[in-house]
Image (cartoon, rainbow, N blue to C red):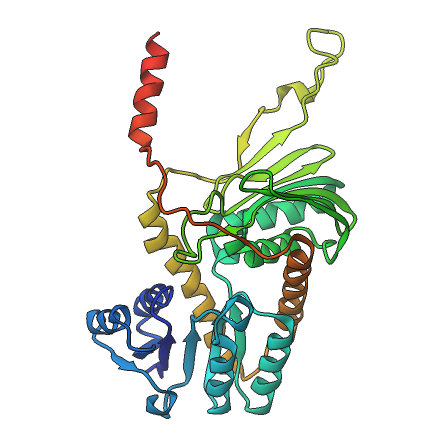
Length: 357
C-alpha cells in the first residue's frame, strides 16, 4: 500500500487551487489541514473541505511531511519565505509559490540543505499545456534557425513566470542589455533592448490595484518569436500556439519557377485548440498544472535529493525579475474599480449583423 504524504496548504486565496490538486491525487497525498490567519474566507475553505484550520505553526502535527506555502513572499509584501523556513526547520518539505527574491531563495535552499528538506518554487504557468507546447516548439526552431527578435507582452502579476517561460524557450536568454523604458503612455510601459543577444520589445502592463491585486490585468502572457523563417507565437497563456511563415511572393505566377514556399499554410495552429470558459481553465488546467508540481515534489521526497539544476534556474529567473523592476520601476498603483463587460455572445451577434450587410 502506498504511504500517503501528509500535506498542509498555507494560504486560503490561491491555496484553494492547491487543495483541489491535492484532492485530485488523494491516493498519493493526504490533505490534513489549512494554515491561515483565521479569516472568514479561510474558515469557510477549511469547513468546505472538511479539514482542520491551523492558525499557529505550533498547532501543525509533527507527522506532516509537505507544506504548500501559497502566501505572498517578502518580495511582494508578504512573509511566505519566513514561513517556509520555519516549516523546513521542522523537517517539513516545502513548495513555495513564486515570486521569490534571490536572497530569499539562497536562504531557503541553505535551510533546506541543513534540515534535509526539499524546497521547490512552484510555478503552475510553465506546466500549462499551451505553454509547454510553445516552449518545446521554440527550443526546436531555435536549433534549426536563428532568432531575430522577440515581441513580448505580460503583466506585473505574472512577470516572474513570464521570465521562467522565456528562459526555457530561448536558452541564450540569461541577461538584459541596453535597456530603455518609456512610461506613462497608457497602461503599458514600453521596454526595448536586448534579451541576451536578441533584440526585443516588452509591452509591460505594470499596473496594480492594491485593493484587488489579482484583478484588472489586460494580459497575462503573449509572446511572439521572430525567426528567419517565420513567427512562433503563444497567443495567450492558455493558447493557442501558432506559426506564421514569412511571406514569399517573388515567383508567384511564374510557372517556370515553382516555389514550395508558396504552398505553405499562411497561418497554422500548432496544437489542438478549442474555446474554453475561464472557470474551466481554473478548474482543469490550473489544477492539473499544480498536480504536476506535486508529483515532481513527491519524486524528490522519495529520492531525498534537492534539485540543484532547478535551483540554478530559480536564481536566474529571480535575477532577471529583479533586474526588470530595477529597470522599469515598481508597479503603478491604480484605483480602477470596475470595467465595461462585453460578452462574447454580444460580439458575435454584432459580427453576424456585419456579415449580413
